[in-house]
Image 1 (cartoon, rainbow, N blue to C red):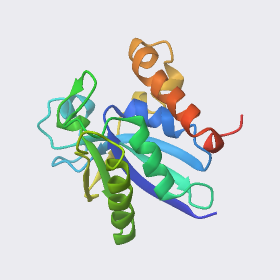
Image 2 (cartoon, helix red, strand yellow):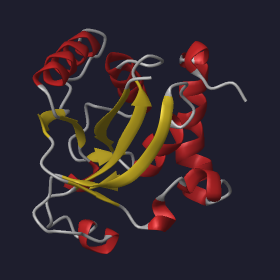
Image 3 (tube, rainbow, N blue to C red):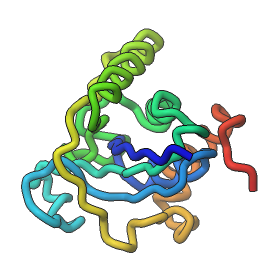
Length: 177
């Protein structure tokens, strides 16, 4: 087993969390905040759009079962990488699309996957590819939110369709129950 981590932001972390938890080889997903300018931010502070943080997920995965490249391909399916600081009705820089790399290899792969994805889109990708500066886990109630709150309106109308899209498009990569 080759345990690795990556941090990605693509709008509300509930959507990314729920979607990546379905993927074989993903060991854990931690919702949090990254690349801001205040230690230990709270959700309320991040929502003010003044802290510089993005809502992100830290994905802990087994590189022998799912590659970084495959995770990025799934990432680009879950959200719209062509909308600046927004996903659907959620807007503000905390909802930006971002790939936070920690090695030159991750940077190279992120650029390649982004360029490949761009070729099939009509609008320009605005995803930021930047070094990971910091990461703080979100409050406990945000962790695995969809599984704990499946009937919440946002989960029903926003998260669930994204989870189903990932299950359909990446069927061979979905965890067996």
